[in-house]
Length: 545
Image (cartoon, rainbow, N blue to C red; front, side):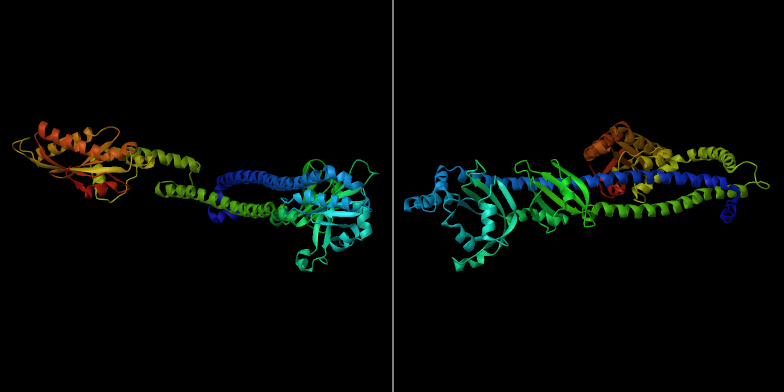
């Protein structure tokens, strides 16, 4: 280390330099440690925020879908609890014309009245087992013809459809999404509207009191595309897959063809939550919430890279910035330590060159500097005494340069410190200027002389500075043998009344000088101005009051 430091000229004083370097490193570690702590908090906050965002979107989806499902339940209750339905369920295939008319009347009075439904419900129908009839708004036909000519499920035969849906027992069941084939043989002109459509099927056995006494089934077809429209915003925003799972763990519908693994389904318990899950080797974040109405669970599966995208990006930037800051900090610590020590070294060398020292002093650098300062302070006292004698001249010269615009006004605390030695303190940067022209001092003294002119200027200067109202201030400066300028400085909180104060001061000054001291004067007043060179502008724009 000594050999490395010797080219820098600090080989013999390396302990001081090392102390400075260690101090800089300690100062560097403080913000670095605070930054690392803050990063962990930010990461946890972002992860919690992303979780809350996902949960909020799922809750919004749940509320919207529950509202739509209320329409399904309302429709089911209106149809199922109609008193005529129980009578129709008892009729068999051999029912005559009057009984047949009862079906048509039920279709017209009950089935067709539900015309205010939204697009969420695609269609609905009632199956009568004893008569093997299917009744929907505007249609009455047997089940075989209904399945062949109107609604059939892709990959499902008539027998399987009849057995699994119409004759099996269902209690407010929502069956998994399936593709509904809508044929158009009966009305070829509607073929464009009869394209296949994915639907969720709601089934309720009739009358529903006994599993062994099933005389019919009420079926509602729910348009899956309406649900996917609700999913679209969440799906596109987070590149996620959304699943609806019933209380038995069956997937009612999903936006992804890939089914949920059993291990994941077993972890979906309670009213909601968030957990990590590996699916086919990919890390996923799984959020879910439960619906109390149907017992469904809404599951949002998001790639962890997407869920943590913002956090990962921040982590990468944080590591880059940490490494950069550490490298820059170490370099800066070395440079600043050297730069901070360099003046000390130069100071010591300068002191040694300017004094009569033989060889290296025995005291350390700080002791040497202290002795030099004590000597300098003694010299400074003598200089200050000399400067105090020159203060009036310096003050007058400063005010003259201020009026000519050769310098800016600094009304700050730091600026005031620099002017204190001249007994000048500005309270703001709002100024006006009065110029007092001594027209004649004949009444003041019949034999004017330079001494009398100086006395007259002194009187005008002192009275002009004493008459201004507190907290405003005034400063006088002699411009010529017969001319005195008074610089008015207005307090910031009362700067708006500066023009009034200036005019009142000019009037009072003129009256007192002429009446009490018999000096004829003319007073020109400059309007108040603000800014660094306000006094110069006020000087140029003065006028008679």
